[in-house]
Length: 338
Image (cartoon, rainbow, N blue to C red; front, side):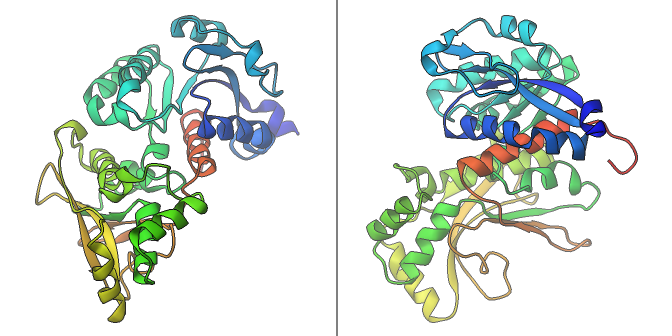
């Protein structure tokens, strides 16, 4: 209890209260004491902002019902009122919300408020502007929730590969398409495989971004930006989709003990290009070993050896946990082994 009392109280403003935002609020309320004991920091949601309304939770209690929320106030005013140290974004990655997402992130960063985001859209188009705002304000941006939910691939790209001379990134970062390909290999039609993914809560109502390769390419664009300093807005994408003709390829690969995978890749030998290919993988390949909706990223380091990270749940809870991890990372006191 003494460690919890001495823990640094961190006020958080959350933008977005869909499934990910709700899971984030629930996790902080549930795990606050544990975070304080283990990491010396206790994040607290001081305000939640939706599209046209906001609320201020009472202490560590639950949020008031939506009918009790007040009209949306200017973001600067919310920051002043709460004394926020972290601004968390859990708004959908849609083109219509991009400008608001970037404007709010820049406002926070220039004020010295750290930004933790699961929103991808503005990272793809305004990477340089966000970086400049963070440098001007002496603040940090963390994007684990945008690069693979609970899979810590973003952390590896950003810091853990320093000095290892990473030359390539090879990934299956989209659990939906891996699940669908495995179902096709079992004899399902594409429509049946998509239906099964939806029933299990793996696929979105519209899985087109998954099947086209767009989502996998987006995540590798962000990983390459972290690892090599690429500007995602300048990266060209060449993607091979999963479509009606893919089932025959998946069955043929399975007949030879191989597994068809949608592999997103980037290489320093091809600057500014991300490719998503349907590849046959063999036993021994970390991407071959994936089952169902699992994800993996292989970082190719010629002298150090490949570094592989796999697992990590693709779900609102998985994304929320990534937001919690990043919030702790930017605020926890660091001494000794910490």
